[in-house]
Amino acid sequence: MPKDIFNSYSQEELTKAIINNDNVVLQSIYKLGFPKVQHFILRNSGSEDQAKDIFQDAFISFWTNIRSGKFAPENESALVGYLFQIAKNKWLDHLRSSKTKKTVPLEERDITDFPNLEVHDKEAYYLKIEYAFQKIGKDCHELLTRFYFKKESLTQVSRAMGWTAQTAKNNKYRCMQKLKNIIQEGEKES
Image (tube, rainbow, N blue to C red; front, side, top):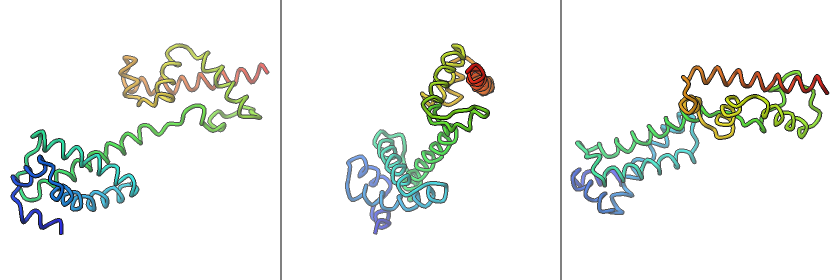
């Protein structure tokens, strides 16, 4: 059923229909475009819900770009191809951001992240981390706050702090080591 729309209208007529919010045309493009996007996302580590969310975001971008004149179709399959490309890019962006932000805030970290610590209850553990966090120094405090609590990527942290990405990565490691050392020193004193 949806494919008939491409036989019934020229690309120019379809573009005008989209600009004029023609429900029949918009629904047909939506129904034709979604299965391909859903298949792509499901085959690339996604879920049905994620496919729906990404497709809706892509459809809004598609509709906005056509209405603003940023895209003009050149052939019969250009509209659906353009919609698919937007959705694909949005999904790939999502995957990239998920990989760079797979961090766990300090308060949710497993006790095993700090080996050799004797922690008998979580409250005491968190108090030790909070104490150490205040003692690690201004730059480390800012770096770890940005990365773990504000969920900024290392690229964002490096820009904010005037470092290269590699320097940010190295400093994050050093700061975590410093944090662990302060906690372990506190253990020895107890």
